[in-house]
Image (cartoon, rainbow, N blue to C red; front, side, top):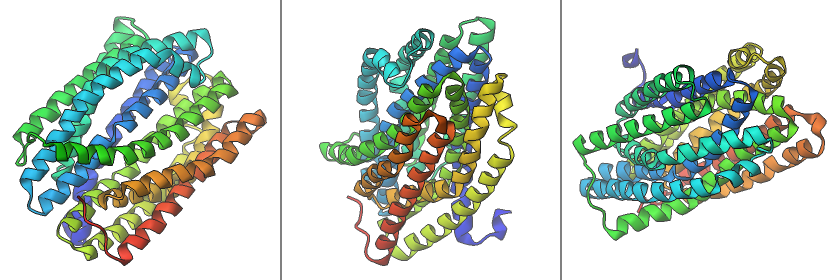
Length: 437
């Protein structure tokens, strides 16, 4: 099938399809996790919603280890600097160990405060969420090591092995969770421990693949470490801003009541799966733009931008229609509670309408990352919060607006990101793009 396509389409899909597999595996696990925990009751499901939201922010804040490593490795490899690509990878692994340890300590200390800030005011929900977060802290180092390893392999234009590692580790996760929750009756704690073991598994596999790769990790100099940290500042601010918007949706849903919170958790897991499905096209966008800049080929960068954006909007439109069509069916899989099902359906209707805009935002993220325009990504995400805020405030002040108001605010947020990033990309491809450091 791929042989019948245009050569550029084949290149894009050869990276995008395994990347899609790797990206979808994680939200599919989260959907399974929500279904397993949801049948324990509304309290564990609410605690999982709060814990997941908090952990997502920490994981996303560390995501620069993967994002910046992909661009640095792809650019230097394309430019013929294999030693520099190996040192960039070594810097990423070094920072993953140090940063993971710091995050673990931080999470253990702030878990009760974080749960309270996210709306976990019920005593039972608060206790369960704190327990989950403190167990999850054990997995912070392997989580960050896996991000560094994934960035290395994707920068080498290898998305197949990251997919296989993601698949294997999540099979371990689901298997252990079923055993821990239903056989050993460990409840929500069993879910958390299953995730930690899976994270250790993934980290070990990524390190093993990195050590066998054609361009292996090398001892970094202070220059590579400084470069990664420089990239990390705007990318972390951008990711914290992204996470703040998503955290705000969970906090607002929590204040609307237990049923809206449960419904929001279901819809958010579906949204995450769809978002990462669309984000698969951002992977070839980033890799190929970085490679094009490594050889100073601006025409190739333009072509990649046109092709991936066109594919993304088409895919977003299709899955948006599918989400709307299934909005009345999907909630029944995750909760037997009729009130939770109704709230999830309302959220999923708006979720479906968001998907073409989401596709534009996610593909543009990849293009801008490939050009190492990290400050642009930070600025666009901060400004998008201004578009998110009005409807979010209305939903808090007028509870009758309900869960639909939360998701309409997200739609405005995605629209702003697409507009801002799109304007910057058009400006970049009309003139010279600054080379990566």
